[in-house]
Amino acid sequence: MELKRIDNIWHFFATQNQLFLKKEIDTRVLYVFKKNKIKLLHSFNPNFTAHSNLSIGPENFEMAVETYAASQKRFGLPAPVNLQQRIFFPKELLALSSRFSFVVEKDRFKNLRVTLEPFIPKTIKDTSSPINLICETLWSFRYFSNTIKN
Image (tube, rainbow, N blue to C red; front, top):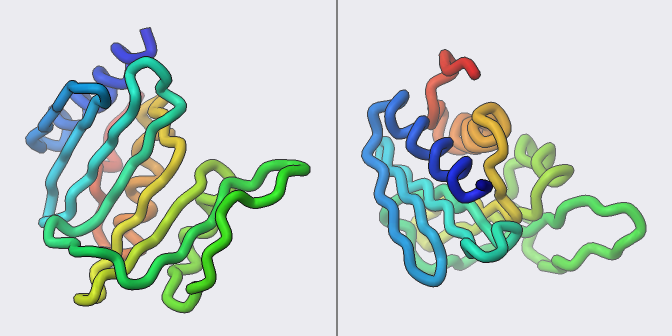
């Protein structure tokens, strides 16, 4: 049931925003969108959907040179992520740390890629709001249309 819901959400976004959706199924399920040379990639294990991540970044992103990570805030548990480089991080994205653990990477050409974990699409609004926040903050455009209603 959950796999069908995730599939329907991504197909809905592809249809409403007139984007090409590439879907690959192997040991992991992979959904890929491209808009304005920014690639959105959602991958998850179909047997255990909590092991999922969403990555947003330029198509031409190379190997990361700098990394910043923020773990999801959990009551009473120490943060599992401990990385040192915190220089370039866009502070507007810190609001996402209440729902996701995320990693921001920068390559040698100053391209940024953001990875959110665990990313489990439940509703259209819960799926589009973090994606649009990241795209507006880093690249000044909305990835998905704001006129979509549930």
